[in-house]
Length: 89
Image 1 (cartoon, helix red, strand yellow):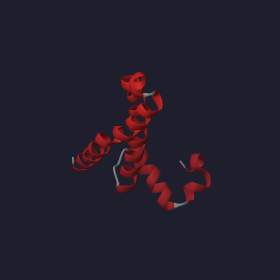
Image 2: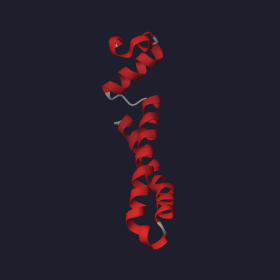
Image 3: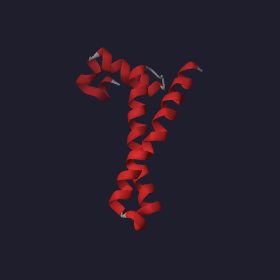
Image 4: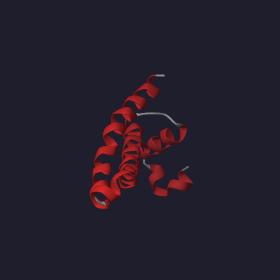
């Protein structure tokens, strides 16, 4: 793995982070990374869903903005609970 990461492979903290990430271990750092990834995906999918559902009625920009703001409202708590449950199991 040090060949892939180059100079980052010599840093023990980053090395442990990437090893935990590749092995599927859920730590605080990897859990926060997965939470950020899930939030970004939910923002994008919320905007797309808002445009598809209400684009013609209230305008494409407003529906995309509302969808991107309301999409993560349901995703963030569920992902956080899911990561905690996966860590405990």
